[in-house]
Image (cartoon, rainbow over all chains, first blue to last red; front, side, top):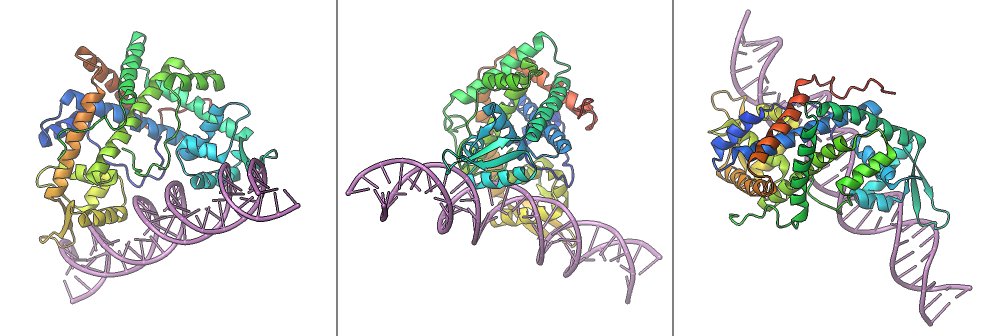
Length: 186
Length: 186
DNA sequence: TCGTCAAACTTTAGCTCTGAAATCTTCTGG
DNA sequence: CCAGAAGATTTCAGAGCTAAAGTTTGACGA
């Protein structure tokens, strides 16, 4: 999910086929089929991000805030986590988490209170409003996603799912430094 | 392509199946198959972005800079564009473009000179170094992408390509406001 | 009972990237 | 020759983030 909201001007973009043709022109080694798949997948993901952001804007929250809501929902009832734990799960520093929580408390998305059993700790808890926002975001996303897959029907969905899963497995099973290591690096 | 470089801590993440199971638990209306496809696609795209960023780091450039290099390469030889035109193509304000170009000139990725035939205009031109960096980024990306698709062979690539293209078409052909419009919005 | 240390969060300072608006330079048309 | 438009840059301000210092609270050995 992308993070920016203000769009100063919409960027011009080539179609996939044109884009791949340009890459071939400037870098003849590319495999057109591979490049087409990769470009299409990236672009679909980007468009999805834009759509989600627009939906969140309707709800009056940012994608950064949505990530926190999601982490709390995923944690399950009673939807509580400490700032440090949230920071770990979101890949942020504790400082950034503090600021993000500040905003979210002000917007009544979460509450912040000290843990009375161990007063060093702080408990961040989802509010009713915060949970409602998350549920509504899921409702909107479900509508969007069903429309996105409208032309992919029946068995095709199984096929698509399996192919994507294989791509993901290929990335995840490689050690991070192994993937994309170029033997012919300048 | 994501924009951040410094990773303060790697976020914890559930597997796709677990993630979908959690969503089902908290929001029973989700279609597990749709959600699996969407989550997998998003995650593959995210991993790709991380991989590209790592490669660019090796080259010593940021993804913001890479976008400028790409725009110039796409424009074709002699790889020249004005700041205003670049800003339009990247979806930035001219001010942001000026700053970005400042950095890139300092790093010998592009040159900035006034157009002698119309001295209001400025010409940004790719340097040899800038072009080399872009070519090298393509070389690394090609290796990575081929590995990414290693388990998808022969006819499967055609199928995957077609399915993704259908998804993209579904997004692009909808008017922006139509996609994901929720009739049951609170 | 203390004193010291560690843990968890917050605060502060500084950085990068961006947009809006003002400014500067140069060209063009009457 | 001047008014105004076009194009780029400068200035100012805001959002987010990190690193490092600071604060509060709990744990533990002497």
